[in-house]
Image 1 (cartoon, one colour):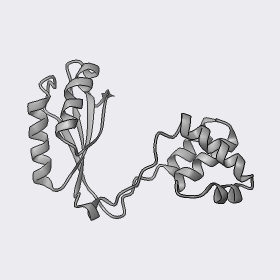
Image 2: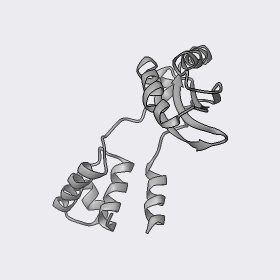
Image 3: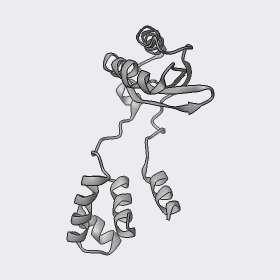
Length: 161
């Protein structure tokens, strides 16, 4: 990605509601240039624009990071875990991978601890390909915890050069 596109991308990450005119003003380039580059980014780099919720305001008290050991991680993630995702709409991320003796990860949001326990019990029933019970890391949500990709992405893009 060229420098100008990177700069525009970072500005969009900071605030996707910012107008092309405001981005152009900040970066001291023309608005049509920003519009042209934004369209290219939207075609190739930006999947969608979304709101970043404040979880406690939505009644979500916990986030869980659940690690399991699947028999066949790629197949189990694609079938069992994706099927589970349809049953458990609180799942926000599913992936196969490697680490800590585990090879599948599920990240989910929970109203409270009881909701988390019901979620884990449901996973055990739905995911028969998981060899071991899931190990979970539970964290409380907070108004201070926000999902902010702008800073880390800007650092990643700059470091990548």
